[in-house]
Length: 159
Image 1 (cartoon, rainbow, N blue to C red):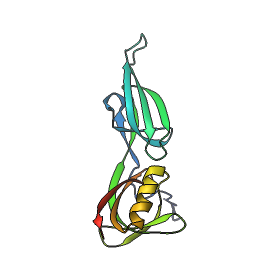
Image 2 (cartoon, rainbow, N blue to C red):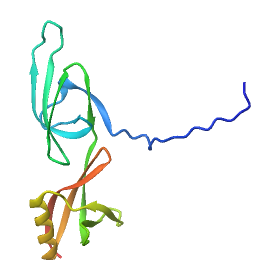
Image 3 (tube, rainbow, N blue to C red):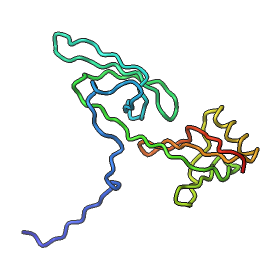
Image 4 (cartoon, rainbow, N blue to C red):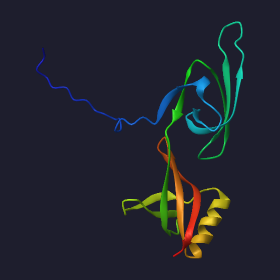
């Protein structure tokens, strides 16, 4: 036995994984999948028959949930795919700053100031116009794999 102390440097977070494994054959349309390291929503799944070497293959066509890019992947149906943890949270919009960041009210009464306005033009115009008119707006924020983005808007009436 040695008397020297061991020091471990941990570069991990709290241990909550960004993804979980799921068998490729069980992933359906409108589900989520990680393709090329990006969280995506599945828009089309097709399964090929088993060939002479044994594996049926699943062909996934999916759209990145943050930037809207179309991605494709082919995986043997018996293999595991990464599925991202996707959360949607509603926040009330308090303010929009000049530099494109929004100030949001959380359920606990605190503020969240680290989110940018969405890049989607139609949603951006709706948020800015609604805010300029003094409406009470609730935005839905989608978060997955360490990224967050405003994805929807609800009008809950005038202030």
